[in-house]
Image (cartoon, rainbow, N blue to C red; front, side, top):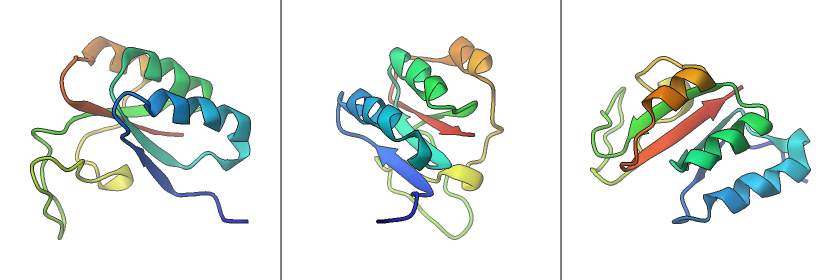
Amino acid sequence: MYDIPYYIKVDIEGYDGYVLDSLKEHKDMIPRYISVEYEENYIDKLVNLGYNKFQFICQYTHKHCSDWYFELSSSGNFGDYLDNNWITEEELRKICKKDWYDIHATV
């Protein structure tokens, strides 16, 4: 048996929802941080898993920080290394766009 992952990056081109659905059956193994490519219905899935703080990060414009440099198409930092403040589900829903964004979530 493995420990609970600290972070999961899900990016499987339209199938991220299947991963989120599978986590419902393993709520005792939910990582502290997770990120998925934006789809509107993924917000509900993340909330149903218990996530309540979010960041909406554009993969085109994310910045490098600390000692790391990320290529243009990378997802960049995660968790406590993100540059923005964590927001609520309601705030997230107000700013969602249909561009190349990731939703980062934590509990």
